[in-house]
Length: 319
Image (cartoon, rainbow, N blue to C red):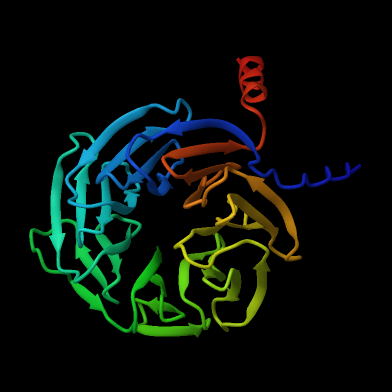
């Protein structure tokens, strides 16, 4: 006799504020979870990069070495290294444990907006206002990039790496996808400056936000538009968008102080999360759990699907 399957639970959305962290590093330009979601990085306008514990909200280390505000950062899969980029035109590779600069890479002609490791952390990719993406070997002592991608006609605002693919968004209104294995370039024209790009978790779609206050979901292989998400404000700032950890919802920062959640399939607004009165500058979704980080002015907020006291009670009962 077969028992009926339990009804699938609706996806849990991080909507309860668990804690607010005063980062004390000027305006927080970007906030990023590490690979396992136990730590996060905050990039400050005071030239520092900080590493925090998510569960305790405590500062673990400060990384100083940039000459101007830090705009983006990424942690390697094994948490041993961090890469960061800055308005000072440099990319820095850091040793996490010592806080020392392993390598400081110059070559971009203007501020560097985005940086990310490949999955093995053997290569760092950086995108700049100079319109190029530069690929740097993390293990070599050479100061030159191993490759320069210069197809964009304006600044690179965002990039993401996934296995053998690189996704870039540019102010020229184009989302470019490089298949590094096949040596192919696919271009989608959006007709508005791109502020953020990302892959869906299943790798089948790309998400992009642009300055026409629209987030678009495209089929990666055909370029067909699968969804358009609107209602938020994004007219002048470089704001983040992302997908929830299970690809059920599309999220975007907004200039009206909220984070917007849309149902991916239906395109309808599910939740308008009030963060504060200023621009929500950056966000980051936990890799496996319904947790969210947001950055506004000098603070980072940690959001969960349930209030903290409920989580703590459950942990006590498990013990």
